[in-house]
Length: 467
Image (cartoon, rainbow, N blue to C red; front, side, top):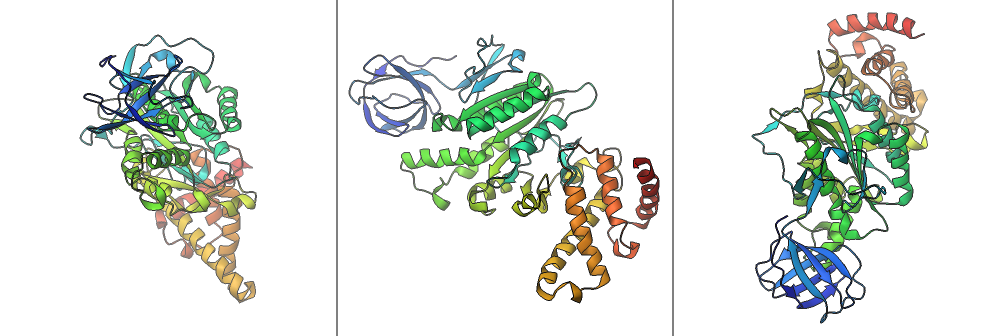
């Protein structure tokens, strides 16, 4: 660790929430770690988040109660926050500041890494092309996840995003001798949710290959800005030093952004859209762009941020900016959930911008793209006919229209609503073919005749085998 000056400053000008405004600090460095000593000898730590010429703003990681402006001492002790890592970090549970939370001893570090990190250099970034089989048909078939991708889940309050993530972590694996690890960062989540995730990791046997960083709802708000950075630093070490394929879950990014807004308000910064700081886009990008692959390195970082959409609003700044930065989104639907469909993934607004990179012959199957296009088109047309039916009544619809309505119901119940079972990509694709087989081939205009002949015939043999 590079130590700074040990000078003590008693020049605190103001305390505002978790922020301390200090004057007269010589050569302050943004991101430096500081120690604050109260008049009774109690010591707290903080970080410089604004280094001006006259005033330095320090965010304190603990409570500010009992801080006397005249008798409190401030010392600069380290240039930047760092994470100490070693291969033994797997299987460990830490709090939001990377302090052990599992009762086990401190790590014997192999190296110390700054948590600030940086986006992967575009010149060094490799194109994500490897298909990840999640076991969910709505994802594997229509919104494919690719190794090295950042694909957020847009959830709504009360929907089972936690259950979906725990199942995805359990089911998503790499094959062969490649090594797989999970890094989970919980930001502002209730104790009940944290217990759910820890129990699911342990019962599924994944805990030994998982690293958990937890900032609970009762923990200091300021920690929420550090938790994902510790988690991503750990993921970079596992992926690019130890050659793991790492799945990073960031839950819940809405809580992270609320903490960002609260700190910005305490600093009296000019607010942007809906009160969030104008630099929120840059701040989120500094996290999301740490996912990916690097040329000539076997490891990878795949990121799944979870966002709870405030007021179910997909145009909310947090959701909107995340959609700009990341490579698609998985959107959960309240109406599907109310119908008892699990997982309640709304495939129409969902998107994977890297899907074409990870599917096709030699990866999934040669008919995958055309089949997905046809399923989208057929389901979308059926949704439009549902609205028409509600206006004119089912009697005014043609027999073909009724087929589309029936397809919509079966698609939601059988393709999307697979329950808690895991489906292989082969089962996912053949389920799609079975639903489309109810239509005459003249209606399947997005699939080539070659694939129609091959897979409709194959469907008969496959279904007999399934029975």
